[in-house]
Length: 490
Image 1: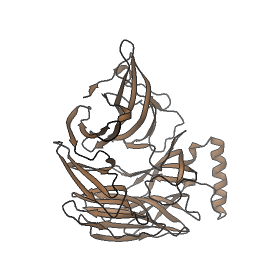
Image 2: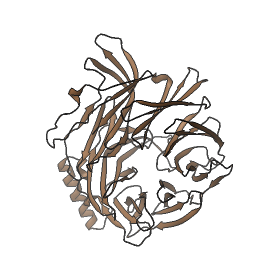
Image 3: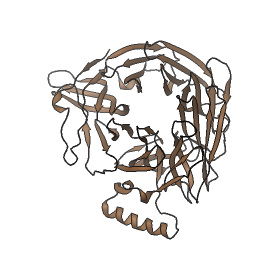
Image 4: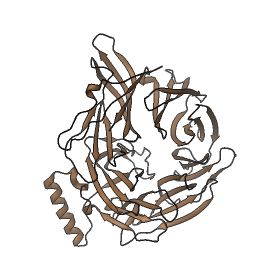
């Protein structure tokens, strides 16, 4: 169905100026004859360095659809292809990989009806199961532990988030114990396969202060432990990501606020067993957080905020953060976040990664992305920042991708049409140099004339996959419309 070619080598590498950073190579490109108007596509990285491509093709009336699943290896060569017999109106919701399977969840137009597709990653064998989950009418997060499902969904009666457990071999669906107050949100859902545990991190607030709760469950949905991490020294814990590990080594890494808990004033790390102190790092302690500002404005901001902090006054900074999942490194952890501000309208729509049922913004604009490196004890080692220009989303979802290279460097990147904007963080070495790479077609005599629905996913070991729909013009051939995947090696 598709074809793969290796891109012309003349454009693979060049030496950048100041830091002599290397432009990402584009060693291979896949093109498929898919029509953007009739196709829904998801590209899913798989831990064995392969990619799983899901695409749904429908007729003009939407009365007939075909659901395709194709696995490609690291060279974008096809490994196997399969189809699933889903209802024509089924819509992809979430996915999760627990070797040797990848699971995909689909929602059908009938309320509470969900289909779960299980793909064997080596053989392509398909198993389809359909359930009526009467306790939820939407799914926000989906994890799998030993073949059992853990889902964060929306209660159709009151619109609040709940945590569900589903054993696919049993009829019963169980609501797991948690706190479902008006101010409660889910911050993280982590499956620790090595320790046979699922951790749910919740943020609980009364509008004035905020604390965190960590609940751990085994593969049967039984509660193993429940810990509260309380505010300290007038610092409210807003959101956090959990690390893997047993009860003696596990940490929470997140952000905190002070008097106005809508805004972040710094980052923290805390041991979940509460045996050691909580480490707080306010924004002024970070070397590069304010580097998205021009130098003079950064200097004025730092002086103003330091004076207010010394006087015991509330900071004037108004930063909202969207956390990313933790990156696990040989020496510790990397926590990345996007700094955004909302523009509100009279509407109330959209689903955010951090589930919060308040008035939703119509647009979320980004100012910069940050990354912080911690050791295994939660001590801050470095921080860095990447200014982001003219990037906005209509829902509070991630706009940038974050990856980790074998040499220890962190990559943050985002697509815009046929250009990938990126920064490579070498710990706290900040650069003002604009770094971007233009996606390449197959050959020198080809030109990309239009790019639609451009996306980027972190793949493996410093490799990313850029994908979307393009129109290609050649000098001596017809114009063609394709779905593309370009491999980017940073």
